[in-house]
Image: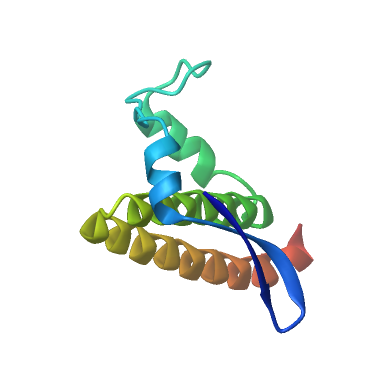
Length: 110
């Protein structure tokens, strides 16, 4: 169910958590990445070899994805899982900030 809402002059739509939980399809988590022939270790090495500004973008995108998963699991009443995913997302955002600091040190030499 979608509800129209208005709060402090902001108009928008709010989705009922029950509606979201009922309409979402089951997520199947893969053990391999399609179109990538290397191992998970090779993938980690390749990501780790990114220039720090690019690595920062990657970490931020990964944090946002994990955060979205957290919201979905919370809507499905999977509170423990959602809480752990939310914490993971925050740690990834902190890692992104640390990599940003590393980039500021390295950038003049690039």
